Length: 234
Image 1 (cartoon, rainbow, N blue to C red):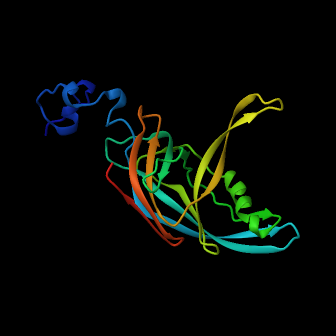
Image 2: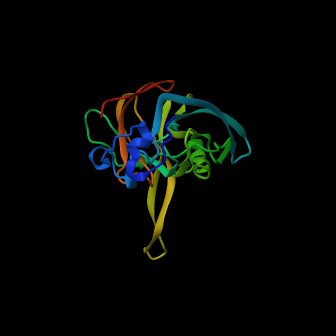
C-alpha cells in the first residue's frame, strides 16, 4: 500500500491518493480561506417543537399556568473530514412576504436553558415577562464542534391565542445620563408573525468565513401547530 504524507503544497495527493502533481491554484481554494478548513453546516428543515408549561406568579400571589411551544431549527456541523470546528458561530435572519423587500437583519439565538416560570402583574402581560426571563439564558455566538447538533431558537407559538412570534435578538445603543453612547446591549424580542408565507434568508457567520454564507427558505404558517419550513433555490 502506498502511504501518502501530508503536504500543504500537494493537497490533491492527500485527498485523492493521486501521484500526479496538480497545481492547487488551478482548482483548489486558498488554504487560508479554504473549503477544507472551515465548518460545513447542515440545516434540518424539519422544525423541532417543544411544548412547555410555564408557571406564572401574579402580583396578588395567584399562580396560573400557560402552555407555550418553542420551535427551533436543528443545526449540525457535519462530520466530513474537510469540516472543522466553527468559532463564534451565529445566524442572521431576513424575512419578507408578498414580494416585498427583506426586513432589517435580526440575529437568531442558540437554544440553551428555557425558563419554566415568570412573574407579572397581569396574566395578559406574561409574554413580556417570559421574554425577560428568556433573555437571561440565551447565547448569540457559540463554538460548533464537528458532528454536534445545536438548536437555533426560531418561533414561539401560544396555543391559547394562536399567536406566533419570531424569536430574535435586537441590538440597541446604551446611553449615559447625558446621552453619550457608552456601548451596545442585546435583548430578546418576540416579533408577531401573520398566518401567511414568508421568504426567509438565513446567513451563517463564523470566524472561519471571510464572507457570510446564506441560504433561502420558505416559511409557510398555516396555524400555530401547522408550520412548514422548506429550502428553496438560492
